Image (cartoon, rainbow, N blue to C red):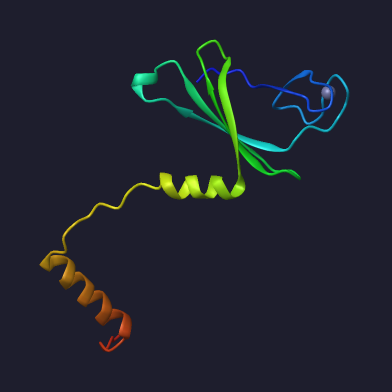
Length: 123
Ligand SMILES: [Zn+2]
């Protein structure tokens, strides 16, 4: 995935690449963050979701939508608490499956072997 990773220095506003630990323009230490990109659903082909987690005195998670030209269309930051709530919301749903006799048998067998009631002989 070809995406431009350019951010602005909080100190001087100069453009800095994410791999830089110090601003090349003013030498300010850059914010510590982790970035992950997520592919869009086909209905949004050409766009990409960038999620940045800032680990600093103002921890936050920033979501931005980038277009094909590498330009951020919009962005929003949420605090750690909201990010955790979002992570919980995004967990894949557990399939509601009815228990079958096989499940029951497997459970019984697992319970029996974990109690150690069965005698095991090693030779
Ligand atoms: Zn700077």
